[in-house]
Length: 353
Image (tube, rainbow, N blue to C red; front, side, top):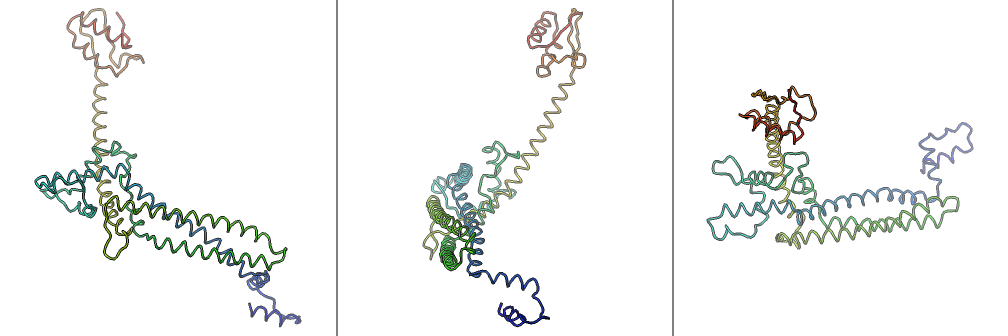
């Protein structure tokens, strides 16, 4: 800016002076705005504030959702119940370990290493299969939902620190106070012609930003409390040198377990889907064979039944096709008439010769 000012002053009275290029002209015009640097600081802070708030809000939402699911999710409790039940069964010969009321979370990532006697299957794969086949009615369908928190959410939660959240909010509060000071300074020294719309826009932003910060501080406090209650719920102990259980310590165990669980969950779901397809194909084949089954009259009793291909009537329902079989097996007119009356009652059409 100093060079631009010097050039303008030196070329002011010269006829052949070189004019400023467009970038320099634009910069010079911005410099003519009163308190330009203060205004730029406020506008830049306004643009970055919403990004910071959104980032903190998104992280806290993930943390709250994971904590709530692990503490009160019905599917999570069912999976943990299976782990306890199968663990007690495997330790059935041990009076102490075979009648446990609970277990430490540290064993969850180790379930994949417990193998069957023939070394073809792990305990975790059996738990996954048992859960899908006995607890999940939508197993093998698109509507089947993963019972545990997503591994990606657990990984993100494990990387979070409440100290970092507090530092970010403290910095935002500090920058907000500085922005408020700059706004007051600009409004104080600016003339009426250069006051609006800066004043109204910034006053509206400052009011909303102050409210957003208060909401974020309250949400951070609630999330921290929820996490501590979760660690007490699972009776997780602090590591040496820690004042309280950190998200990394707690969620890393769950992340490893959920990652292994989901890989097996996908494979088992695919297997169940293939079994459903085979079963559906077999049912369709059997239904097709029954549909092509025809019945021919065996007695010249003056009464005959239509076969499926001969009927041509909508009234002839295939759902009760078993009555054809009964009619075909008839050996006298009396029983044949009884079957005929039953078919008429169900809506079948008959005709006499």
